[in-house]
Length: 151
Image (cartoon, rainbow, N blue to C red; front, side, top):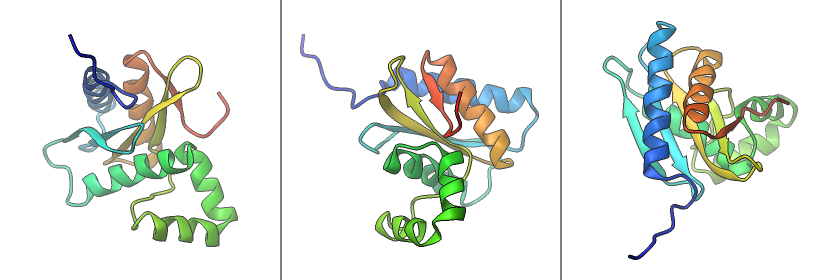
């Protein structure tokens, strides 16, 4: 039987992340969430938009995950760099076609050794709560979450 590359995250892992992240959002009674999971190559592996999630939430969630993956840094570190190095982050946004959103809620999904397998972006509630849900999803899939802050 042929084996195919996963480019990081498997579809089963991506679906587990989606389910657990959304469950965490419901547990916390958050506003409707949109969850985007990218593989290591920056391609959308899975995405779900909860009923009632507002218009641009898919793009924002994608931008959170894409920005984290683009620099290999969690959203918290990207937010700090956006404050300290505005010119660089503006250039990053331009290079990424506006798809890099440097705020919490973009979380890298890593294996036990720290290898980046993909990223999760969530949008719908305040960024810190979006991040809590991303972490819950990543950990439920048996992976390590990197928010950009020291563990």
